[in-house]
Length: 321
Length: 294
Image (cartoon, rainbow over all chains, first blue to last red; front, side, top):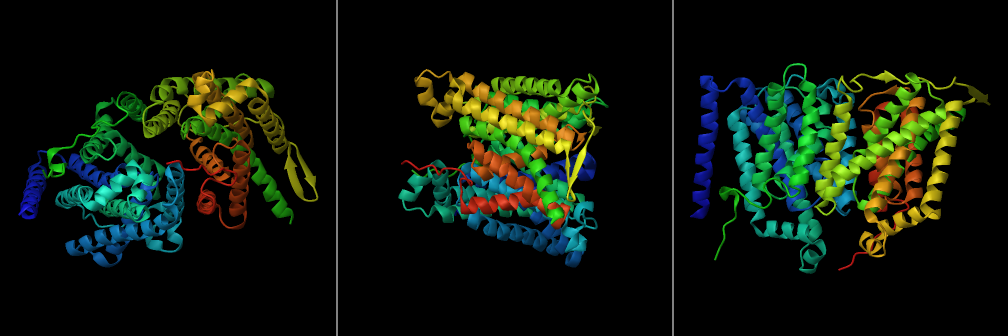
């Protein structure tokens, strides 16, 4: 029973990670600040796996990922604030609703725009991202609870280590199994050569939609987790730079590489926060001078991403001989 | 009616500035297929050079433009040689990420206290503002300067691209850079020249922007850059008249929405138009569809 064995393995990994981190945090070994950063890194990793499906595996250039992250965040936060209270079950439902909302919007946007090619698709999604930022900024004019440009408050702090680890493992499992299924093969063939894929009888538009909507759903769920991590949402958390952040992570890790995306997400978030600690006081603004330099140097030295095409063993597909 | 005409004139004012930036994007994209995200920041540097030239050294206006043009050209050629050239044969996304890195670096490096500083600085007016009232429609000499400088730049660009040897080389490289190289065109030099030419226009644009909207900041290049790029895509990227057309449409739509609907939607409308146009013509208004070869 390979399925059962895989599920048991995942469950053991989950118990080990979630339990371990919670225990360390509870004992005071890791201070709450770094636990929060770790939670943020997991959330970013989920969102980045989403973009990795869209851009890395399907080859659809999207510069508007943060918009879907934002849609998920606002949907989940609004539902929890209005109807959820403090219940864990409601939280799960709100997260799924956030993912669902992102998926629904992705369908609407994907239907017309996925017919565009490479850079034009990038610009159309970038445009969509900026439109969504304008919508978030003026959201209080149609739903006062969303707060608009003043930011949304009154969100319960629900996101905990077990929740983020659960969704991170779930996202890895979904991506891995999807990529090594027939759906995944079709998706990869579109990235490699769309015309060839079409000639082989693959409905490229349908598979592009599958890739795009799945990726956006991940972003939506991650957004919901993010909303309940800091208990505050502001439109500037979902602007163009956030889309770029995620894109940088995916490219740094190596396009279409799950392990690379995972490592790069953690590396990126811990680098951002680590530099805050390492730099002497008064020089913290040098953070954003060093990071671009690091980014440029990494790209010049390893244009194919840190990991290239190698994967961690638990993310490799089964080879049937 | 006067109000409408007034808004058209205001729209032209911003549209011309966008056009100067958009030309740089469109030429660079036409030649190396790279979205040069750092271009908006080159525009910002142009505005800052203008600020220093006017405020600290009190140079006459032509010298101000000239210094901004020289400064931006040198900067862009340096960026091209250091950051983009080594990646020319790498996957396209690597250059794009590098471009984003260069953009962030320019923004944050110049916002350090030791460089320009993180604040908003008021841009001095290099000449007293005069406005003419014609049947209730106000036209200022700032708008006249923007109009004449931009038209002069466009004519000069048209001359360079279509009447000089370098322009012919640029067109050849953008058509097919491998073949152009085989025919004896120095591709590297042409690409550097294109970056420099685009940056020179952005430098002029930066000074004009500073004169028209007298506040500068090291992050000011981001939004105009993005909108100018969008304008270039709207008009058909790689196409010079298309970039100007797109920029004028962008300026008008933005001003009209701010005037008649709400200035909150100002940044959004440009992109709504962009998406609608791309759905109708995926290569932009004046773009020529590329045929797919199997």
